[in-house]
Amino acid sequence: MRPVIQEIQTAHTPESLAAQLSTPHSNVVLLRTLAFDSPSARYSFAAANPFLTFRSFGSRCEISSGHQPSAINHQLQFGNPWHLLDALMAQFEILDEVDMPFPLGGCFGFWGYDLKNFTEPKLPRRAVNDLESPDCCVGFYDSLVVFDHQLGKVFIVSTGLNADGSRSEARAKEQLEIWRERLENGAPASGTARTNSAIKHAVPEAGVPFSNITRADFLAAVERAQRYIRAGDIYQVNLSYRLTAKPP
Image (tube, rainbow, N blue to C red; front, top):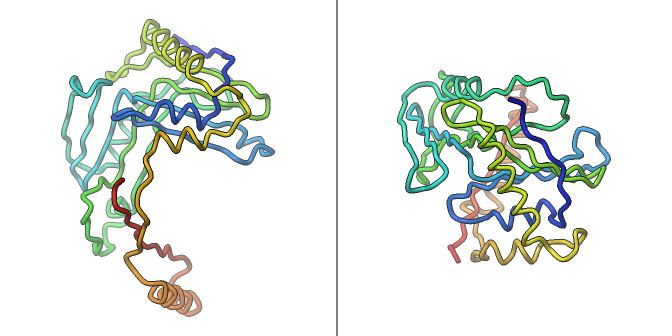
């Protein structure tokens, strides 16, 4: 079967749709472009409720499938996260010859720096995981909404993918109707209105953030990195610091 792609009229913007979708366990993804003049960056994407989630903690990898928290199936595998993720992506790859300039569903998430241990195993492991956060967390989404900012059009894309890799036309139509209802209901009064207020109400404000290092210490680290670059020891460095805020 081919993915279902349907244009829809809506007053939603990418921000207002993401704000409406932001509920516990929805795993909302918003890829927002600002370079409207670039042919390769004319689209924004919104997705929610992945049918499968992949998380890794070192060589321990968790695979969770299912939409409802009470019915999620958990699997545990051990190995190289890159290899396991490649196998999953191959299982859910859509080979249909659809001439579209945007993705038909997809795998969205984040990959952390500690995954370097599986590409450069000789590098020392000095980072302390005091947050117990995963090295990577990605979701596989069988449907998404595409905003074409150049043409001012919105499309729903539904692939009908299931967690076992099969495709279902009935599921594709079901997801299409779910998106249609969300896009037609609860939209802002004006399609051109900014939705900062909607996002503000959807995400509670946290306390004032504070850094784990001082400004002087960070500037000293920058100067040290510059010395390494001038000496030819390194050509690139990523300096960062942690901002912490009390929950609202």
